Amino acid sequence: MAAEALVELENVHFARGPHTVLDGVGLRITQGAIVSIMGASGGGKTTLLNLMAGTLAPQAGRIRVAGQDLQALNFEDLYRLRRRMGMLFQHSALFTDFSAFENVAFPLRRHFRLDESVLRKLVLMKLEAVGLRGAAGLMPAELSGGMGRRVALARAMVMDPMLIFYDEPFTGLDPISVGIIATLIRRLNDALGATSILVSHDVQETFSIADYGYILAGGKIIAEGTPDALRTSDSELARQFLGGKPDGPVPFHYPAKDDYATALTGVWAAGEAI
Amino acid sequence: MAFMEFIPNLGRRTLRTVPNLGTASRFLLLSLFAVVNRHFSIQQLLKQVYGFGVRSLLLMMVAAFFTGMVLGFQGYYALVRFGATSALGTLVALSLLRELGPVLTALLFAGRAGSALTAEISSMKATEQLSAMEMMAVNPLAWVVAPRLWAGIIVVPILCVIFDLVGIFGGYLISVPVLGVDGGTFWAQMQSNVAFSGDILTGLFKALCFGLVVTWIAAWQGYAAQPTAEGVGNATTISVVTASLAVLGLDFILTAFLFT
Image (cartoon, rainbow over all chains, first blue to last red; front, side):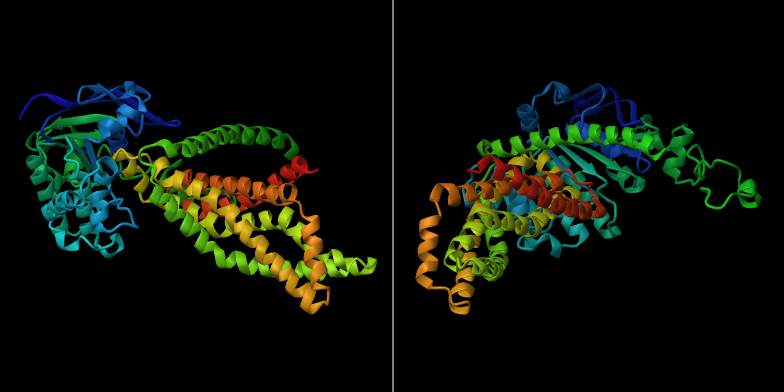
């Protein structure tokens, strides 16, 4: 694995209104690797992906992708950089009025003037790689969740990107589809010589394909390392997350105003909020 | 007490509205000028013109036909008292060309095509299709919004012309065969009293402005909607209500300025 960093974050802060989402995140993603970012739901993982893709801007800190500072790029340059990125969205985000074939062809049609026969070959190659050449003519509504995500994967790959983002690629899929998607991510990453950043809370599948992982909690990176190193991490929070323990540093109970006994036995005025 | 809260509330609302208006105006300008963007497609524009036009055509014709017939009846009722039924053709034509044609076309367009447009764009947002486009380095303003905006500007005046024609025909059917007004007088009066630039063109200019405003509001409400099922529903309602009120308000302003 080359040690050159493709994506670098330094001390990134991001807040939505008064709510701090990321509080000084720093990471370094090397070229060719599959890197997973894990954390609880609502923990800012997707925000982190959007920051790396330049669809959001951090309030403080620096994000460099392929040696370019995202904050310093103008609109045109950012779009030029995005042509070398792909993203698999959580809900596939296929264009509902286009067939599977046209969905995959969309980026090619928009960015290049290709001969129809060349375009057809390129699209069919990508669909074949995800095993859905036979479904080329189907509309997104006719595809199952797993198939839709594979078409979206083919679309994310069609420009041969250097960097691919996956937003919860395993969520809501049956075990067979999860296995297929995981295998495809590994295989396509290596075949394209790309770098993949995978945001997920699915520990087992993610660890089966990731080279390196980060665990995000409370807006900070609390642990990082190879999957094996993370499993034996001495961070209690990391152990709670990876082991799926209901209680620990992340409490089971949402904080309440008073204690349980008072809430059950106490007197309260009618109409008062619980 | 309630009054004391009224003033800060008014201030807060104003402070919220003004930047929104600014963002919406910027959205409008960026989308209008996106015709020069390389991702603007004439095919998409034609598809939208066809969609907006054909989807609204039957509705417009039926509404225009009834409006014209009612104008025939009501106009006759007013004019017959003064023995001026010969002016019925003029009354029907001027009412439609100057006022009812553009306004009703725009209101129906807001209900039919505007609501569909808001729902379409907001669902595209809710299902991350707009974000996906951005990630593929295709500007959604150029690919999605601009063709729809220009289609609205092109289609509403055309629909307005059709509305006027069908409406006048409806007025004729009631005035001449039913109420017994002389056919020759009906058309001759209309021909000599309707001015091309003063009546027809100002009506079409109004329709053009309404087309822009309705499509702008519809597209903006869709684009700014909360990306949830509830957000899509809310945006659609707000879009129709705001667009309809905007048409009526703008109609007053345009009429006052164009009045000669």
